[in-house]
Image (cartoon, rainbow, N blue to C red; front, side, top):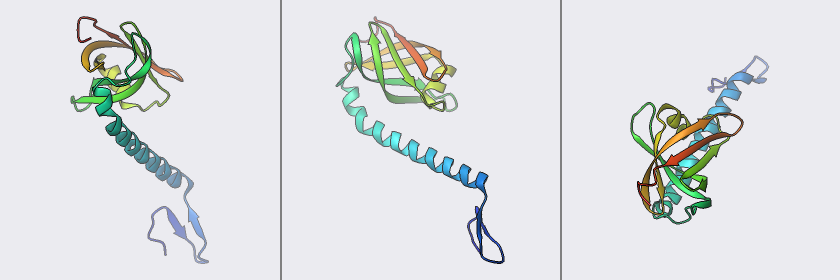
Length: 144
């Protein structure tokens, strides 16, 4: 007799796995692994980005740190994102429909952006689709 609730055996000891249960378990495991990967990656690159290393020039592509307010917790959340910068507009995007930073900006479009080691305030305009895009319009009077 199997102790795993996803696996059953019959009297002939044939193993049966419920497809929906297995699919849900695999999706949960993938989600957990994906979150762990992004947390590890973010922790590794954050110090360099906080110092402004690799940030885009006024016209260019590069990583930035975006600060959002957690839609549930109300706490400050920081995430490094690859961006396209055109003057005071910073374009960031994701194909993941479950990106927390995007959902946080939908709930509270006021954000912070760290560029060249300085914090700027920004307001987000968002568009959902196959590619979810946030345009962060930064206040040129704040930061660099």
